[in-house]
Image 1 (cartoon, rainbow, N blue to C red):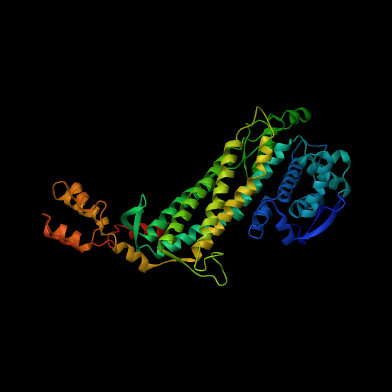
Image 2 (spheres, rainbow, N blue to C red; image 1 turned 90 degrees about the horizontal axis):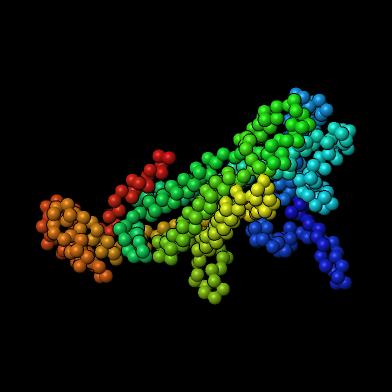
Length: 483
């Protein structure tokens, strides 16, 4: 949306002719095709600021300006010559202050050229001649020797790097921090575990949450470790036109210093396209983060269903149109759905982007435009999960009651002690006692008293309860404090 909150669109009139009408932001969101721009538009504004069409045009313009400035400072480019201090300052200002009005002007040019990058080049040339008074011949050094992919790969690299560092990572780190806090607060709170949907060796709520923290942090480290390369090698990556125009210039040194000056790793061996392998590496890590998020949301949903977690009531909120008692775990459900959409998009991008027919095909161009949507869906999932975490709290009474109904889970402990002291057929005897049966405390303790065990071992088993049979769960959870 424009800064003023109004968008003029062509809408069909009663006589079939198009009529222009200004729509408010709220109206525009109702008309949006994507829920990221519509229903969730307000939440997604930080993502739109980085990944929108206007943002992409802004980054392309910044790259074009940076290339022109870099060329002007390189020895041997006599026809361009060094920039005056005033021109240098103005060009940097243009890039830094590029606004939606500038993007709209570029789009007007694109309507004629049907080429998005060429439109940016023409816009820059027009400003060089009209605003700085450059002769047309000098303005031709804008986009000198470059191909669209030279501009695009750097623009997307800058855009993705900014979106990752400034928008997505803060939210992801905040979610991990929320869950870390919850894990440490409940590291010693006993909870009945479930394997295959059946009662299993008890754990603690905190330890189970700590597992997700560790898994997320692994993927965050992977995402942040991805090295972002940049390509600036011309039509097929050979710098052929550059060498013909200025054979005396060290183009490898020039382009390397340019790419590295943009904060990227120079990629000298490419076709027309930078191969996008780094994007596949990054998006793979983000997709795996989304996989862990789905796993987390399903577990939290299950804990709510079991009554282990209770949801805080929100004044005025309705859980069901028919059942007034409902308090649904909608935030975890929303997060699961949006993480799934993100994974689908990231998965396709991982498979598609590193593949290009021979030296170039344009199938990556349309795919790249969906990067913002992938980030947006994953970011929306993170936001929803954080809301879910904020409104849930454990119910110690429910956790304790469930544990007290599951004395059969101590069979593992008893048969393991029997193994230590050489009691025959420990597993088989506990299987006969417990499998498929509801076992009481009395049943188990009667069995233990009849065992041929040292007194100390027998007493330790008799003192054991499902709530105390949590091993080192609390200590394992406390390891989060050491990170």
